[in-house]
Image: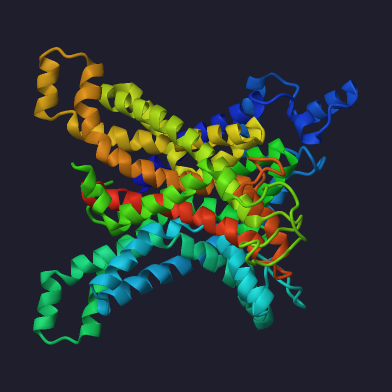
Length: 334
Length: 273
């Protein structure tokens, strides 16, 4: 098993390297001078430009930049922001990452609840038309444009009903000090019910938006697996023995849970892309919002760092999912 | 298979109807839009009324006219990018799958790495580097979706390449290009249609997202994603129509393509996702 994890882990390196190389080429070679683009002006004295270039390490030959950046990145140094002079990008990202983590975890919870819930209803009470509709929902939910849904929810629940906050992560709550940066977890650790409630209120709309839009595959997977299990000999045997229908469905459900849960790994790319839009829509201070902010200022070094972080996250998650899968599924040999 | 089999499928029919409406918007914008999309024609922030069925925006422009004209940008960008990534991705997939060996291994690994990465984030990076413009956005979206076509076509090629009739063709001494295009390509077309329509839906959403971030058009050009972004500032004041209609159009158009994809996959049995 350890060997499997090690080999599978080593495979992350080339795929992150491919992305790094691609991003490096795109961001450094394609445009003109990135510093001029970031400053948005050409009227800058030659000397000052040179000083900025050398501060950012951009005056060295490209291949030196390529390896130097990589070496620094591995040590956790992502360089300095081009726009906010002297600001280390690594500390920015460390600030924002927990917010994104919190949003994505809650969104997965929402989409699992929606997927498994609808699957359960369809298997238990659904008829032909209900199931066909649910399946269609499963394959078309992804077309909902996240900002449109998010703003719609803001309109109803914040502007009209004044029930939930329209954005941000937390109103100021007395005595709350983030420890991990994952606010719901921190509030529980600090036994601060007020902060927990506040954090949850801020989470409802963003995680509902992202969770709903990515729940399609879960709906389809639950439904088709449940239908297969419900038509199996096992279920027939339960029914023949007079087991109540609600118990039969519960038994069948167990067989469906594992494939649905392991599917989460495949969802991750979709989830991260969706997180960028969800965060922007709800002013959620995660790395998605950070990326979009940096895009607006053409802060190339920061953009490069964020994309690499995304690549590492995707690589690590797929590793974790593969390992979990290998542990659960006896058919996977390692 | 007969064309009518496809057209009689309710999903495909509904999807095509939706797409047709937006194509008509784009082609006949001058005749359909009651006002100019860029000029102020009424007091600002008027709610929907008989004169302005979708209301007016903060500059007094007719929202419906902007929505009609906005379909042009989306459809143009998506058509350009899909054509590009479809052709490049399919060609690479065909050759890689057919040749096999080291070329195939390396290419597949690169494509898989790109595929696993969030496409929107990659598209953002590319658009930033190329500079914000509709053509550059199209290029960015095209590059991002090449792996989608590559993976699908390559998989199909691998599954048929060892069939008897391909072997016979090879024994007969037919050149690889003829085997690929005359014998393998037709078998792949069903799956290609599913991927194509599904990918169009994806590309519409990506285009809208790039516009939402401000990476495609410059004001005052009408564009759904960009108009939605500008409209968000007015919803707290209750002016919902600025963002609701562009947002609805993005989702509807993407839904049209997703329905077609769903219908075709039902008929041809091609599975995706």
